[in-house]
Length: 255
Image (cartoon, rainbow, N blue to C red):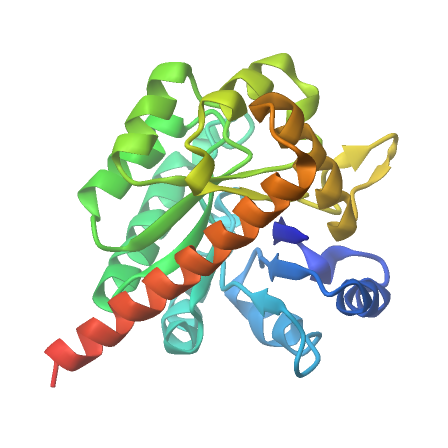
């Protein structure tokens, strides 16, 4: 089971969630919303677990945490995963659009210089702008568009740019999102929950609720659920292997 976008540090009892993840043998990407949260969130992870911590600066906090970009740069060499990053075009954040752009551009530029990273990206009401920035910073890494909510045409553009997608059970509750998930390339899809922010049956989603996304994809793709689970794990292996190889190649080229 895979949850490729969860905020483990924001659960009321993160350690109990981490213990349950480890007991279930899950693969989890624990995203952060500020660089200053990265070390503490990384410390939640026990040795030998399948949890990885992403270094992020959430677009909704860009105007408040702009000063943490130096900290982002300091930690980036230690982080293979970057997220949650991106842009948010919601009306309550539009006034901070320039700060969002400056932060996103800085992060993409830093990731490109570092040889590329696996990127978990927020694009609410800002899909075209996010794709524009990814096009401008080709080589920043492999973008995974978390909870994609763009148009079918934007989906086609994202696929052409090499984007991946992480899909959660809360996302699949909407018919539009189900149509988008049906059209996504199966070999570029992973499951997520966006817990504890996403709600399922009136409660915060837990990482193991990613199984509900696997079941939803099986229905949409008309595939047996065990086959979907195997496909998702193959996708994850390919994603991680590809990122490691690109970083190693850059290191060799720079010698």
